[in-house]
Amino acid sequence: MAARAITALFDDYEEAAKAVDRIEAEGVPHADIAIVASNEGERHLGRLPPVASASRQESDAADGAGAGATVGTVLGGGAGLLAGLGLLAIPGVGPVVAAGWLVAAVTGAGIGAAAGGLLGALTGAGLSQSDAETYAEGVRRGGTLVTVRAEDDRADRVMSLLRKSGSIDLDERAQGWRAQGWTGGTVGAAASTVHDVASSDPLVPGTEPRPATDPETAPPTRLPPGGIR
Image (cartoon, rainbow, N blue to C red):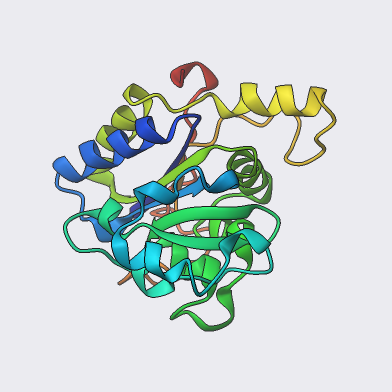
């Protein structure tokens, strides 16, 4: 059964956190969920577990020099994804708090040369370059990204939970950014929420590359812009 990387952006961290809780309540393992939230001004420092807060004394995530602090914390958690929240500094995005499987790609932990910041992590998970740029810009501007690896039989439910939890219309937001002078992404791109990554994603265990012409490999699925608040 193919796995999909389902990605959404939130203005409000609390809404994103509730979405994570609801998705976990549906039986999706927290190992298949990731969250990345802007920590500009250390706005989320109080949300970190004690071990991550202590690590703040040793590694300043606000310097933007590279992905760094508390990697051991953010790669895995105890009782749920948010219990593993930790500090990172992502080039081009800035300081964030993050947890989950996407962090391995951001930092390069455990996957060799796959590190490439948030943009590289998202394209590695199956998003197009333009979609990845837009999501990364959303985090840079203060948003919270949630991405979930879900099997086909759970994908629709995960999408519904992300919508109901308050995920934004990414296409509409990107148009507003372009009006302000942002030049990233692709003009007129549809809101990108679901991408089938089973055919080639190295981050999805148990999958093997398939030829692009394989009729069993579904193309990326997109949610219409009107489907997100």
